Image (tube, rainbow, N blue to C red; front, side):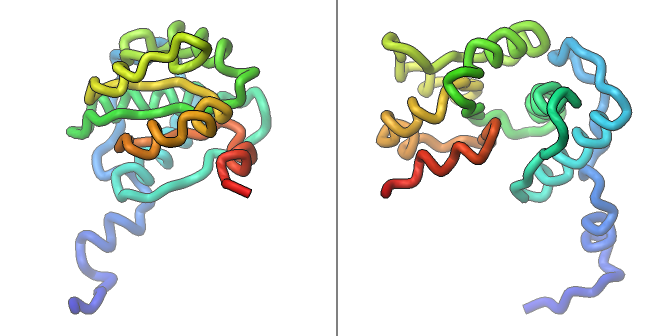
Length: 166
């Protein structure tokens, strides 16, 4: 086993807490990030680049949704992975999420998996972005557990508890 040396270039890069490559201008994000949202995007990209999970928590109204849309756009445009991604939110937020994604991330190939006419064929596309609710994930857990996602985003993550069997 290799001993970790803080002088190694990889370790130095990791300790900067910066993305492996800077996040450049985005073509598929139709908004403008404020300076603190750009900092949040860089943090999220650092986590993504290094294979870490993370939480984005701040007060309501500060633009977490925009940071996530920008992250998805940045991954699609500036990183080599093009796998499936999923956004899971409370049922009461699905229509708002659809509206915001279509307004600021229309080119991201968003598929809504919600309601009575859910079509599992959307998961056949390797580069899809799926928006659904916690209840749908719980009800269709067999479908979701058989699909590999490159990234999963959980809005209002306290709702994850409904996915845990009792």
